[in-house]
Image (cartoon, rainbow, N blue to C red; front, side):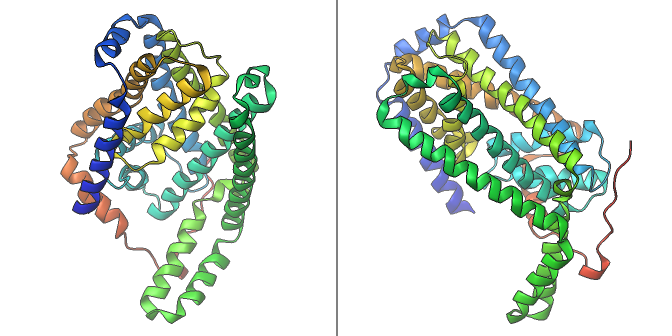
Length: 352
């Protein structure tokens, strides 16, 4: 873990240094000082709205597993995203479902599966908005011809992958016992206890996709994914316009797709990768001056990450958690003991 942390930290430093290498830092600071405050405040409000929507959407995905409180979903979402920014190895993706499952008495693997389902829904929403920009608006005609083809092909391939993932989730949701038995059978070459635990894991993890077999819950979760990504797009658009960069609102759909790629690079808090993805996006596709793009990238990243880290630290302090404690919890979550397959609890359909 120590070597991995050092490597990703070095990668972040290298990417951020590359990001700043062609910028005039004096001009960048001047751009920051001259940015429109009203638009930055609007972007800040959008950031808060995204976490409210995330918690609400998560509740719908969790309902087939068991009832949850909005307060718990919201606080654990904030803590999880804060941990993503400050802890290595994407610990927040493990801590968020672990904390909620412990507080609400749910299965940890099943709760973790809902986070995987969130990622698929996010993927669908980003691709749908990208398709709206590329095929639905004349603004896309401004795309450089050498980029339009690759973007269209990427969007089409990504859409196909998203559909396949939704199909896989449906299979996992509708046949959890068969999935568990299949994995246990395939694991016969392993020691009996390990193979049995793998089967238990597959069964319990599959139950987390239960929302995929409840059309109403799934449709609501899918629908909430679009306000979520529209709020994220609005944040990016407001910051971009605050720096005088001419980008249509629908252009933020393309920018969000690039930022998703940047965030996927495993640097702490997406430092460097997020910044460079933003800079490339607004300079390549919308003709932004480099120094304005660098300034806007820094502010967009700050608004996207710093508030959630601050609020997450406050929630952690209120709950008696520390960074060291969260790291220990991450290890505990990865080593979570699973029940035997024949002792799996029956799924409960939550009622209001």
